[in-house]
Each structure stands twice: as structure tokens, then as C-alpha cells.
Amino acid sequence: MLISQRELAGRGHGVTLVARREDRLRALAEELSGAVRVEVVACDVADAAARADLLAEVARRGLTVDVLVNNAGIGTIGPVAESTPEAEVAQVRVNVEALIDLTTRAVQQMVPRGRGAILNVGSTAGFQPFPGQSGYAGTKAFVRTYTDGLRGELAGTGVTVAALHPGPVRTEFLQTAGMDERTFASAFPKQLWMPSRAVAKAGIDALAEDRGAVIPGLQNEIPARLFEFMPRRLLLPLLASRHPALRRRRR
Image (cartoon, rainbow, N blue to C red; front, top):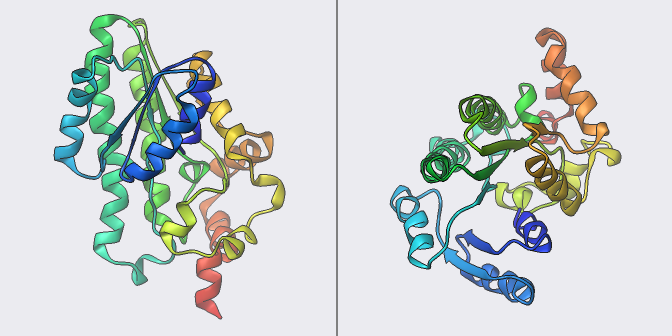
């Protein structure tokens, strides 16, 4: 969700863009470079060695990380029985391992300075089991719990942390996971889908206002909260029956 970097740049923050594909980063950097300083660092956050050097590379450029946005994310779609161990583990490596690694490194720089902010991108999928995306939902449940705990640890340090838990958003996630967007979209009411810019704004607003977590849109927050307390014996069949990857398998 590089759109969050657009939101930060729009508020006058210099940004360092980090992703695997340098060509896309360069294109976005050109778009943003008129008003603020923009740096580009090509890095695969799934690679532990690359992550270890990332903040050092930022420092070598004379920059300080004041705001860290952990928004890299991948996920499998479909039953675990038809997936591969490599694919299931890969989403943990990006969604959990990279987030912990970069957050820890950033926090240890921010706390001595007495300032800083971290935004971790979760998902409403982290509020309940999600048959058809079991591993992905598990990683996002971790993001939620981890961010809440970290927020408690950082109270009084001058460092803020928040979690952004969006519902359905049109990004490259579905293409990467090999799922047709129209098929997937048909499983969710139209009103649940939100523009990526609105989601990014909600996340940066939450960080600026020191709110610990935000679910953009009441249309997403209400079901996410309700599903938390719904009995699993009722919830699991309901969710499994609606997931397009599982419906496709039953045909």
C-alpha cells in the first residue's frame, strides 16, 4: 500500500520508499519529488539479510526514521490442503517476521530519541478465523495483538504505535495470490470495499492522533467486532460458505 507514502508526502513528510521492484519505486518517487525529499531503497523484506541493512542504508543517506509504515503483505488464497508449505511460510516471513524485525530495529532507535511513530498494517481478517485464508488471517491476528502489546510497552516514551485494519481494498494482493478480482469481489458486499486513499488517510490520521487501532469505515468495523463474539460453531460455516476459493472447490 504505497498509497500511505503518498499520504505522508501530502502532509509534508519526506519519504523513503522501500519495496522489491525498483522500477515502480522510481515512478512513484518522480510523482512525489516536487514537494518533499524522496529516497528509493530496493529491498525484499522477506530477506533477513536485506532487512538487517535497510535502516543502516537509510542512515548512510543522512536520514532518520521518524515514521515507519509496515505495509508489506502477501497471502495465500484457498484451502491449506491445496497450498504448499513454501507459500504458507512465505506469508509468515513477510507479514510477521519482517514486521517484527523492522519494528524492533526502529523502536530501538526511536526510544532513545524520545520520539517516533510506527504504523502496522493488519486487516479485518485478523479479527476472526478466515477459512480460505487461514494462514493470512493468522498473520494479521498476530499484527493486531503484537501492536497492542507494543503500544503498552511504549507508553510514556514519546514513541507512538498504531494498527490499521482495513477491510477489502483493491490492491495487487489478489493478483499476487492468483485470485481473480471479480470472483473475489463477488463474495463481499460492494459497500465493504474502500478506496485505498481513504484507507491510507485513516491510518495516518490514527497515528497522528495517537489512536491505537483503526478499522476504516463503520461498514467494516461493525461486522469485524460482531464476528469476534459470534460462536465459532456458527461463524466458521458461514465464512467458509462465502469464501470464493472454497465455493469454487465445491463445484
